[in-house]
Length: 155
Image (cartoon, rainbow, N blue to C red; front, side, top):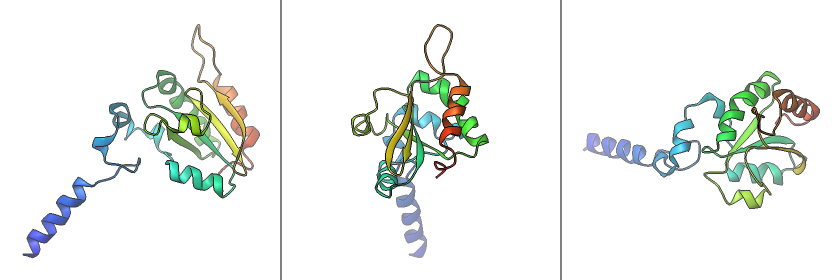
């Protein structure tokens, strides 16, 4: 009887296994499933956590991206190491999974890097790393953005 109970609990746990997105992996978009083990996406913040930080009037960075966005796929591997090297906790919010936050957070496109000071948006960079023939930013632009807000925005 005990073995059946344990097996049932293990099965139930595996069926309800949550991901970093707070929902079963089977409910995620395919592009999101592809990045689940990518170390460039290891600072995922969920809507409830984001709203709590804003309500608590914290100062922090959020990198809004979409896991299917080609500009994000090119930008993230370049700016994540910059943030890490500077000791910045760059929270990452996947708008593909939580698309209602485009409007809620006034995001026109991805990627967008926002700095919140004491729970209020203070600064933002909309767009990714420039590529030949495209507009955008250099890695040095992102580094300067992080450094500008680093003393207070490292939560």
